[in-house]
Image 1 (cartoon, helix red, strand yellow):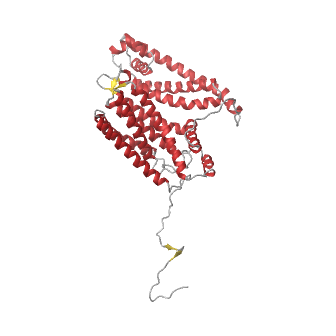
Image 2: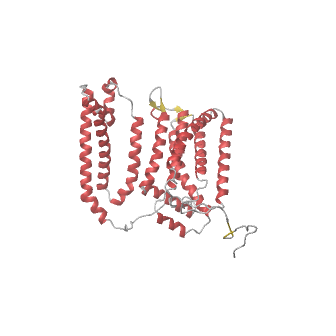
Image 3: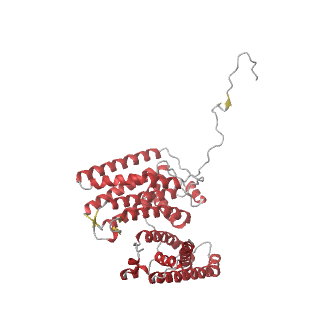
Length: 417
């Protein structure tokens, strides 16, 4: 028991100090404003790296696998097995392979702790001075300043505001990384071949399998859910005043821009990644049909998530609990995963027949059009919301008429003036 908890504490310290070292070195090498921009990508990359190593590393927890010559180079790059050796060493094991792994664990732990300590000292003596000396107004840089266009000026402004809000806000990145990480973990689990313990992506060309269909649909659903939840959280309350004082167009125009932001940030990246992975599969016509199905599913999810969402992303204040982060997560995990499994089975059977493919695509297109029409029809009478108002604590009984309390006269009683 003592060996187990010492190992767990050492492994956690190694991870924590390694992240501090990377952040500290990056902060010293780059100017502060560039480091703040890169920090967002470092956090998301680290989170994805943890999940990827956890799900993709091979299982070699047997003496035969640990002593095999072909696995020695891989063991040298997997910290999980270093601390397995540390655990066995603390238990008194004298197996040579465990002794070498234990030695790697202690060396890695010492390097991580020393690196974290050096990073903290450098941050104290140099980073604090950089923060103080950093000008409040960053001087303009020479060169061509170009931003991509995503439609009209209003749509481009809201899409760019949404992209930059995600890149600059740590709170929104954590929420998005949580949803994307869970979806990525489930997708990797679906891609695993139980019989061989391998992954579809590490093998040669495969046919479009049920596991690939499920993994892409799950990733699409969690991506839409994560972006939609992040839209509900304001990045800065003063930012809402910029849109409030410049609201010169009708609300449907702003809601169309919000829809486009959700499609670009949530649907387009997953669709692009799935298109790249589809090159590994054959026949390609089936993979192309699945990409069409996946795009329609993403549009349907986006339209459903925006029903009743009459806000500009990241600008409306919210009350505690109104974001429903946990509710949305458990809804997707408990209800949508079984539905995704059933839908993937239906799609797999439909891919074998061109007529069934046409019917499936027609049903999805019709469903997307119906949801889009419903959302657009409700948006015609919508009013943009910038403030979440708490419900009234006092409930009226509806006795007031024309701002006066009507009292019916009682027969036989004198009436007061």
